[in-house]
Length: 140
Image (cartoon, rainbow, N blue to C red):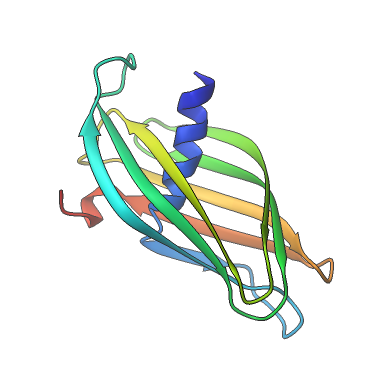
């Protein structure tokens, strides 16, 4: 179950079709999030799940202030479940961080994932990044 949760969280970020961030000031780190190499496959060894989405997540800091992400909460809209996880991801000022991720789905045609990443920038300001992934936004 733990690997399903981790995969969950990763996918949400993938869903990055839509992103939002808390309002920021000039002295607050700012992140952009994108997904690349998105693919969908079938599974039969995860009870209750029929598909897996694999992707690469890219976080980019765009304001010249480093950001450290420390936790996230991912929610499956169709399944109506949420999972919290911890992270230790550092995105340097004007730099990027890339990770491979995956998430399982029981209903890939309707599934949507919302993930909220939280952390702080190097000035101590809170940074929140919300990403929404809808499998219907991708063609497979």
